[in-house]
Amino acid sequence: MDESNELSATTTAASAEAEQSLDKKRFDLEKFRIEQEVRIQNERLAIDRGDAKRAQQFLRNPALVSAAISLAAVLVSGAQVWVAKISKDKDVALADKQNQREISQRIEAQQGQFDLDRAKLIIEHKNDLFGGDPVTSQRMSMLIQTLFPPNIAAQIIGDSPGKSLNASINMGLVIEKVSGDNQVIPLRHWGNFAVRVLDGTNRPVVGAKVAWQMSVLGTFTYVGATDDEGISTATNIYTSFAPATRTQLAEVVDRDTPVGFTDAAKVKRIAGPVIFNFDQR
Image 1 (tube, rainbow, N blue to C red):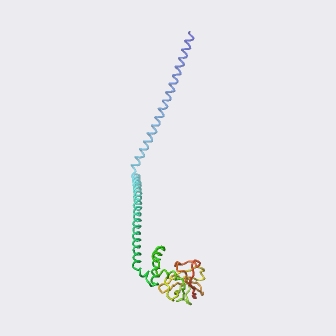
Image 2: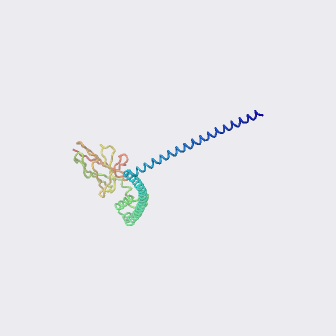
Image 3: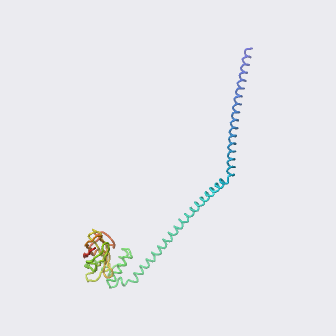
């Protein structure tokens, strides 16, 4: 019985000792935690004091304060400029759209007026177009073909005398030299040449196409049109930089050939050629 009491007392003492040890560890741990919190708070306080000190130093330095204010003003000004630019770009875009609309409206109005003027031209000159004078009718037909698309021009011209003359104008044509043959042209300069195109009745042909060409340029060709007197003019297509004897030829080509420079292979020859000889020295 005494041994049991002794064992119980020993166990109780050991439990009390273990409890005291655990309480001490808890105390030490809580003390460490509190010490760490105090240390962190002290560090934060030191940082805050440093920030406050720097702020006081900054505020006590007029140059730094002035610089900061200037920087802030620059940033604000830059933001205002950027906002103004965005607003300006929008205004410019809106103005551009408005201008485009106005231009389109003016073009439509001008086109409508042009259409009215073309119709008025036909009404006022219908006797010239459908009258008995083939030359006048031809000129009117050429004008209509210039002003109107081909399908509309064909409907307007119809069976006018000018139509039959236009269709047959490439037949029986004669080309003759007028001026420029055997001339002397200074080096690196240009001379003038002229030919006349006549029909089968020896009358001048208006609007005939004449191709001018020099062998020195290969197939390079200039196409011109005859005036009211049936005359087509051109300069020498090539000018020499050294003394030489040259030739330039002119020939009638199909009247549908566009005026301007082209390749000889693209033109259809009708009459000619006539050959001009000239010297450059």
